[in-house]
Image: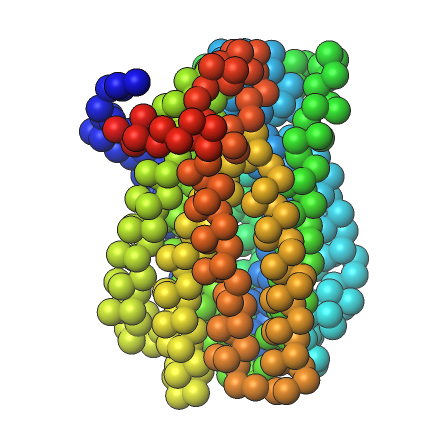
Length: 473
């Protein structure tokens, strides 16, 4: 069967409309984190290491709620494609409730039991002490951060991607100004050090939420304030939601715990390495920031078409998005390597810390091209309704291969930090091959809307008919 030629210009335009605002939003956040790091660097490498390990705890929270983000994007984007307003509102309400439950638990752990958290991540007493001071205050930002993320998911899936961007601009600007004032004690305020950085984070998150809410109201967004509809969970939507979310949630939790164990190993490296890792995580956010734009574009553009029943369009968009993302990540990685000396120097790296930080960057740039390809494929599968395949692969490789390998190299054999770090990405090439096979088979298209389910019966999967040319034109 002959089909129309793929419209690259229309495709790239749609990707840009979603990806660029999301990438800019994440770039702003990363820029704010880099400025934070630069300011904290002036206090000493111990302070950098402590705040960096606290960030790993918030990353664990990220793993706890990201499964619900994936589920929310799956349902909201497909219902958006089907123009089902009731489905959109109820999906958002369930997603928000689940995410805030996770945030509340982590807020309690950070503010009430910070000593236990820091002992888990490092055995360095000086770093533990500073981390406790930071967590007691920064923990209150967790519910605000997660609420902001939930609103951003809703807005992005309904193609209002600029509103979260404006919220990030306000939040990052507030954070930078307050860091300058509260860390060093300018304009008559006391110099609070890392406690000032934590307080600035809390206030900045609140400002970001306020800006998003005001702009959504001013733009007449039909879903953000439909509170009554958010919690109308009739017609069996909750079981259907959790049936799709459970694999994603299991994936994120188990991967989060696995990453925590890896961070426990990295937190017991020399102090210079811990500081270098903290700086690296900030730079990693730069790469992930650009990637997140493509990941969101993939989830929305594919999920929307699946929900609307345009399955062929969803299929041909999916694999193009993977390679487009990898190309941009490679470009960003080359820039990062070329500019590493001024960047690492400004962020307080020197001597052994500089050497280790540069080594981390080199390893990551190579790994990120494959890693982000795996990530965007998995997000595409989830948005299309397949929350199982990528999840099972990631969990198996994390617990059978990565965690034992990193633990042995770091805790038993005491190998150099860079070698231990490289082991963290050793599974990516294998998973990439398996994910590519699944991508081209097309069996990841599993609609949740009536329109999508009806179209599925007429969708000629390549594995059934061997007509891949039909999809590639």
